[in-house]
Length: 175
Image (cartoon, rainbow, N blue to C red; front, side):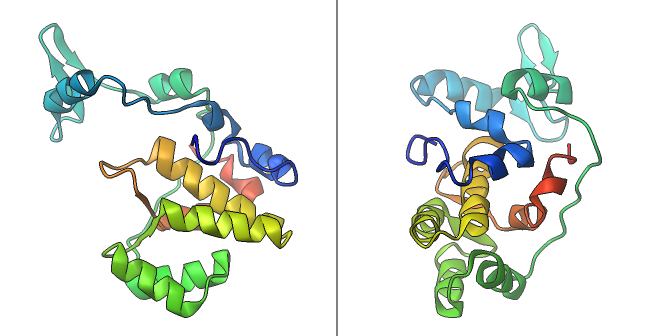
């Protein structure tokens, strides 16, 4: 989030309405690679928990709420698998990138993803064009990709989360 920083003043209200504003202050500090590697080695997919010398530790929604200062209320949002054509459609419709750019993005990301650098470009372009809603969507998708749904590469985010941002007033009702 260091690259994006705080949202442009014109979209700050939209970010607040989404309920994701506390994530702006969060960051993943990769200063201690050894500690991160140790936690990765202790993670077990089958149990979704850390197996430590002192026992098993599981991250709960309460832990997420305390660490990220997010309200954990409302309904769960279920995401469906997206076909690449759906991803292209969403990028064209919601971020207003050209069909050619959207198709190239899915090819470069090998599927239903968008690069964080591409979101940065969309954000800058839409801020310059005073297209506040799309700038807010790009900003929030970047935020989700950096903090909540960061993957190992920390270079791209799944486009399925963009669907949850269509109505920013509804996004704060998801857990």
